[in-house]
Length: 192
Image (cartoon, rainbow, N blue to C red; front, side):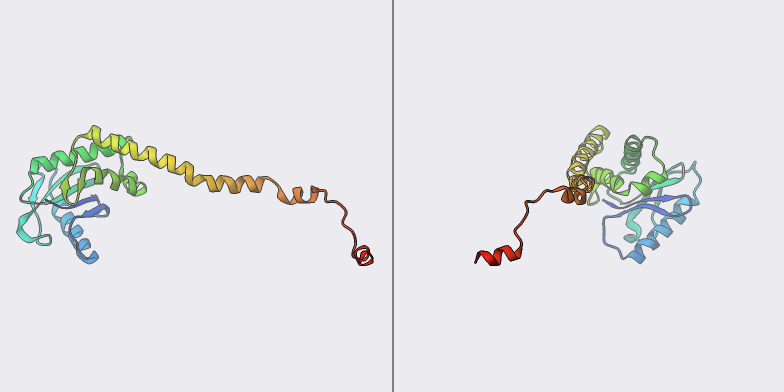
C-alpha cells in the first residue's frame, strides 16, 4: 500500500503532499524533512529505492523516488508494493502532468494545485493504485475540464447580469419616464 506521496523541490520545500494515513501536521513536517534528507544526499547514479526512516511504520516501509529537474517525486510504500511498479507509476504521473501542463515545471504544481491533486486522485486513491493507463487518465481530466468550463459559464451568469444592469444607465431611464399629471391635493379635497 502507498502510505504517502511527496513532491519536494531541491531546497526541501514540499510542493505536493498526500498522506494516506492520518498524521499530525508536526509529524508530516518531520516526515518531509527526514525523507528529503535521505533522498537528497544520494547520487543520481544510485538505486532509486531505499529503506525508509523511522517515522512511517518503522521498518516496513520503503522510499521509491525519481528526481526530475528541480523536483523529487517520492512514494512511501510498504513491502507489499513492487519497486519497479512504483517507479513506473511515478513515470506515468510525471508524464500525465507533462501532457496536462505542456512541459510541467515546479510553478505548475504551485499555481494549479487543485488540478494536480485531481490528476493524482485519478491515479491513486486511498493508497491504492486506480489507473496506470495514461490515455484513460487524460480522458478523465479532459472530461473534468469540460465540466468546469460549463460550470464557469453558469456561475458567470450572475456577474454578466449585474454588468448588464450597470450598463443600462437606470438613473437616466428613470428621469426619462413620462408620468401623467396627478391631481393636486386641493383638487382632491374639493371633490369630497
